[in-house]
Amino acid sequence: FDRLAPIAGGPEVLADPTTAQNRALNWIVYEDGMELGHSKDHLHQRFVLMVIYFISGPWTPVEGRLEWGSPVHECEWEGIFCKDVNDLEEELQGRVDELLEVGREDGIKIDVPQQIVNRLELRQRLVSGEVPAEFSLLYYLQHLDLENNQLVGALPTPLYKLFNLQTLFLEQNQLTNVDAIGEYRHLENLALSKNAFQGSLPESFRNLNKLKTLYLHTNAWTGQVFEILKDFKDLELLDIAFNQFEGTFPPELGDMKNLTRFFAGHNRFEGEIPQQLSKCSNLKEFQVDGSHDVKGKIPTFFGRLEKLTFLKLDTCAFTGVLPSEIGNLKNLTFLDVSSNYLEGNIPTELGGLESLVTLGLANNDFEGGVPSEFGNLKNLEKLYLTNTDLSGVMPQEVCDLRNRGNDTVLELLQVPCDVECDTECCTMCS
Image (cartoon, rainbow, N blue to C red; front, side, top):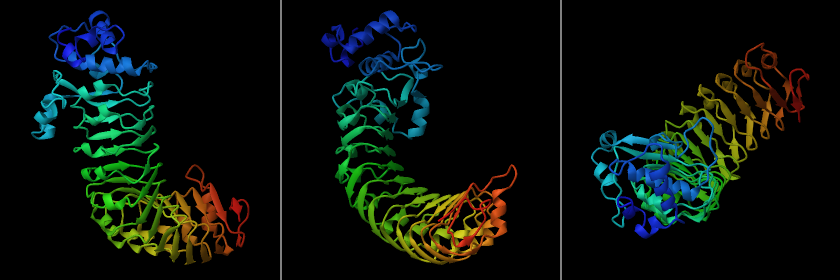
């Protein structure tokens, strides 16, 4: 009792039978199969976790997994991942004292065990919609996943006390306010997608320039997002799709040398894709679809980004010809430039996209014939050519992709009706 009272809000709270703190105390004393004595180094940590459980639960047990309260070390419970303090000291390169010794801002500290909780994954766990204050006692926590819970409104105050977080996942809640998000000075991974955010990003976002991954998609954010994000040089993944962001893509995107995935479709961006993006040689996935005011020519530099596997540029306002350089992308599996204003012949070089699975060229002004080189696309499953000005006869090399034994088969071959093609080859004309 005496060891737990200081971290439980005082002896009155701990002794009150109506509190979660009292339930956790009685569980440790009378029910816990580990039968911890007062001298065990993880008594505080185990107590804090059970307080969180009693406030947030009850949780539906998952068959085959060790639920919270099982008679084993708490580091073996479902959703809890721990690290040895010695290993953490080496990883943090001298910052371990800051992580473990500072304590909570009010001066309260828990006894730090040898095996500390490093990551909590509590998806669909906080069924009460409440974030217990005891979260703030896990001030050494570095990774927290609260996706798909019942969190509503402002980010709960106890979470702002977790200053050492490197990862914070809050997707699929109903949050509307994270104005103090900049308090997380060590944050590297942040997910705020599928909430109820509106308006511009909080000004405190500028402090998060250590971010490596940022998910903001599927909200109602507005404003000039890149006025803040253009200086985030360490970004590896940026997903801001399905919002109402506006403005242009800045040349500073080219300074994000580690960027591998960029998703910005279905916003209100305008202008052209900056040439400086060609410096992002690690780019694997790029998507700006559904952006009706993004225009100009599709940059030829995409053909030099040899790691690209996914390129989605449909439903924009691109003009001119489709660059033949794109045919250099041996790793590309998905290419969609449908619903633009592209013209001219389809480049025969696209027949060099040996990994391609999906190719969308529909709803453009392409003319001429379907390249016979498409017959080299041995992994192709879907080909969309409808609502173009293509004509002539469908090459037999392409039709052969529709019947290839046990190999990958071209499942969908949709063409304009001006292309001569029998029904055994083409699946639809329009």
